Amino acid sequence: MVRLHRLSCPQGSILHTVTMPSAIDELDARLLRLLEEDPHVGVLGASRALGVARGTVQSRLDKLVRRGAIRSFAPQVDPAGLGYPVMAFSTLEIRQGTRDGQVMDHLRTIPEVLEAHTITGSGDVMIRLVARDNGDLQRVIDLIDGHPLVARSSTVICLSTPIPFRTMPLVEPAASAAGR
Image 1 (cartoon, rainbow, N blue to C red):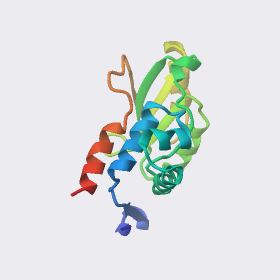
Image 2: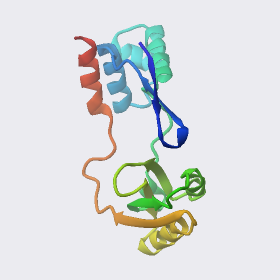
Image 3: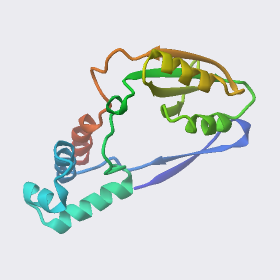
């Protein structure tokens, strides 16, 4: 069941939020775990490992991709392995009365900016960025701050990542919710 909600936002725009069914079943969960553990398994290998038909695995993969549960089959590239071992997070404050689209366009031109999120709180945008060293980090921050609509930024350097980005802990609760 898909529900589309319309919410009024400032400046007359409309925000659309989509409520998707969160239900995946145990087979979907087993398939996702297998792909996490062995990304090279392939459809035939997955069907053997899971004890189901190849067509079933392909159908489940197609469904998970259509729903957006699987966003990519691309490799996970580690910036440190490419020579960018310094990771930092910056909060940007955008000049009031402007739209952040121009700032986002600017951020897209900076290869070291890995992510950008609009946020609530004291800032407007949170970005994750990488650099070759601290001097290079200063260069990247100067590029970001150089945009005329960026009023202020605050940057913190990541010292370690004890819990890297992960989604697999969400698989079990999603599969369990489907069984209720």
